[in-house]
Length: 132
Image (tube, rainbow, N blue to C red; front, side, top):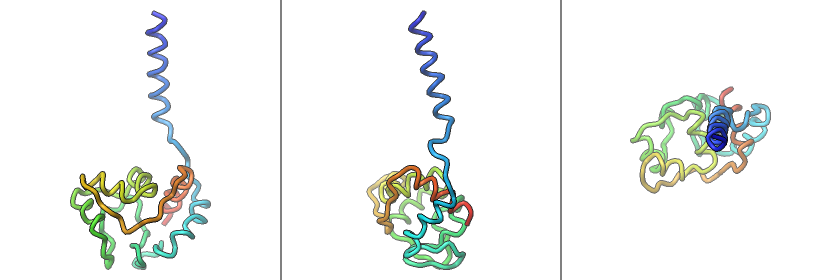
């Protein structure tokens, strides 16, 4: 009986922890972090650089920035279809090539070599991008 209570408590705790976001983002800090990205990306609509404009990126369908030529890895993932939602961006910002490979189901490379290592920075960047 005691063991079953411990198991029930542990299971309930896991459910509660799974429902709590890992890290809350700070858009102001994300804006500061974006300075590292600004050499390749713009947050102005229609302004593409080495990377596509990130204006409206959160919630955008895969590969839909006008005038931007996506890399082969991104195109291969787009064939499977995805939306650049918060879940996608969380993984993509940590390791772009790994995320594209996961979606495409085969080894893919992203043009984007930059990676954010810290969960807090990823959350901050996403909060900033949600404002653009």
